[in-house]
Image (cartoon, rainbow, N blue to C red; front, top):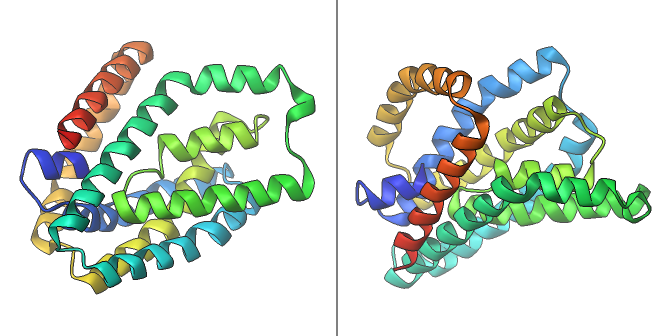
Length: 231
């Protein structure tokens, strides 16, 4: 959402990020509730992720405050951060299966116990910074990290856990951007209204179009967006 707001509608990068975070905190709540009812959320992992992500989001917000989100320099940094996060998403989309296969073939190298918990907290912190600065990360990137750290999790648990921790993270980050004054409320309302038919259309496309084609199309589109953000 953020790259589209920046490139197509000319929204300032910081405002695009803040508005997208507010949008995500609302829309992801419904998904998290659904996964909770289905029992497909690993709350122990959500707790570890939030231990890293929430403090990191606060620190990132304070850093943005100290530098000033409306300065051209910070706007450019945010723009590059968005591009980097988009490219990481492309990598996650294209290579998640290969990474999982590599990990499953080497069970002796999988983290356990305290090392696994520490790695999860650190991953949460990295995602917290990415999400607060670029609004991107609590999706394909987060799911890929979960698959790498917990290869025995089912796909439903990965999706549910990824959405569940993203709700408090995007909410805290959105509150931070509200404090910074970088949320466009009229745009947020329009996005929420437009998301209703968008969800229906997206569900139909997901059922009707082969997954490999969608993945390739999305990767090409995101790569193009990242290049335009950089140049």
